[in-house]
Image (cartoon, rainbow, N blue to C red; front, side):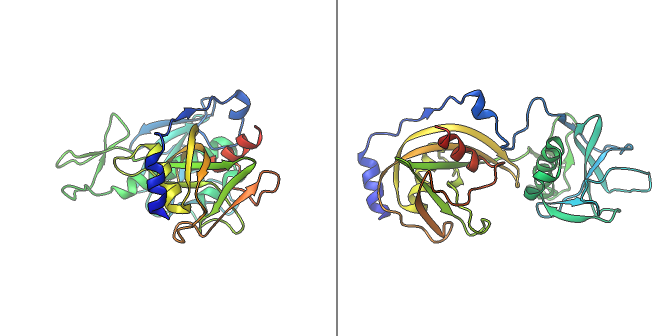
Length: 296
């Protein structure tokens, strides 16, 4: 089936990418974005000394440390000692401090993606972006060239090796996500790691040497065996769980029968727009693509 799709793809004209111009209403969405008017502002300030009221961010495996009241801990007294405190931003003049090592405060850890409804938007933005920064820093504690302990670069958000001067910048992994339509029907699929019952569009990482459009066509072909066309770019979304930039598209069905790969996709089907299954969270670009389509 995949060979058949490749032949059909090669026989067709090259895919033309169309950019969709979103209206202001289409941008009015709970989808996670770092907004210009947010009270959370990013900053790079290594080795920061905590001040009263500063927010403390402790992470473990995409989970954020919270107090017994399910609140983000704040610095209250000088008895709190940390191995390192890296300032990555401010909220209302209080620093957001990424703390390394074990917390001296009793905390429990909650999934970062599930805390969005528990906090004001600016707090959740800081939690999500802090998770990206934590993953990047903890993944590059040692230099990949000489194995020395990395240090913060003073003038920009980067890590530098004090021995060989190798520099590592924050890493972003580009990924495509696509909503495929066929008249009034939407192709929705399910990955094994989704919440029970949830169906979504298809997504995958952009490979080396690929454009976003090539990655989209490949992912659709590999995951469900379909040929699509009329690709339209809609919008992008940072997805810092831990380091993805999602590039959102729509596409129209052209040919093929659904054949799932049984690895990344466990089920896929066409759904009429008036009879949809449980959809992804409203903060996600997956849901945003569906909502924009349904609004016409």
